[in-house]
Length: 93
Image (cartoon, rainbow, N blue to C red; front, side, top):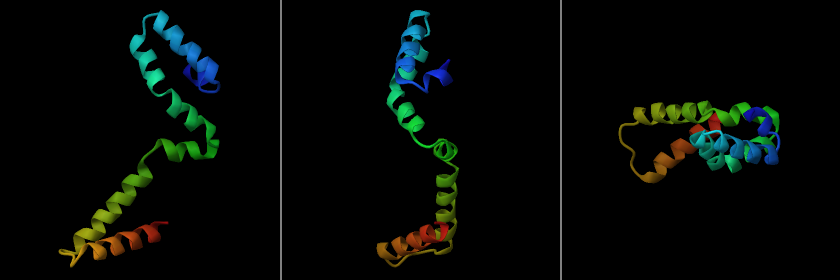
């Protein structure tokens, strides 16, 4: 029911009302709370959905930054850290 409702905003609202009527208030509240996020997600091209739904890219980027900054024990100033992180991000990109 949720997959069908995600394709149409009116169906989504109807599903929230239906779940609330049959006693699933928690599920209805959750769907209502994430309604705008879900609709924005569905408006993007289907090819992008997998990359948006997972945080693997962000986790890998953070891990790479952590690995490379640990090698340098002490940075002389904030700008040097920023230069290193930016170069890592350029490399990943």
